[in-house]
Length: 122
Image 1 (cartoon, one colour):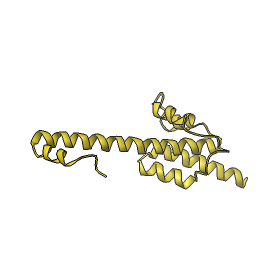
Image 2 (image 1 turned 135 degrees about the horizontal axis):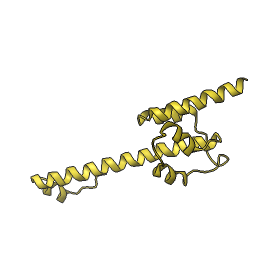
Image 3 (image 1 turned 120 degrees about the horizontal axis):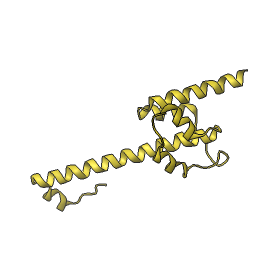
Image 4 (image 1 turned 90 degrees about the horizontal axis):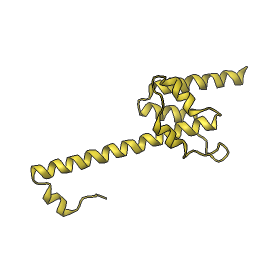
């Protein structure tokens, strides 16, 4: 369903109206991307908790130049204990990180996954 009514379309026939419409559209796109990014962060944080890892510490390994990630800190409040959480598979996390081009964190997560697999074999 559109957020714009018939009156809006008439208003957008002018150049100023088109600029206003384009600005609103861009703002919605940015907001949608931020929400999806927050979901990616939540998947990452919950995976860490489910695997007894500190999401902030692991993130710092991938991005040592960043002092703090406010969004990660905010999203951490939405996580639950691993007993309450559903399973977040390694493949799901890696896929979500890849979808957002988060290669550095993906590499660190992949290393942890490999260490976990080696620990089970040894």
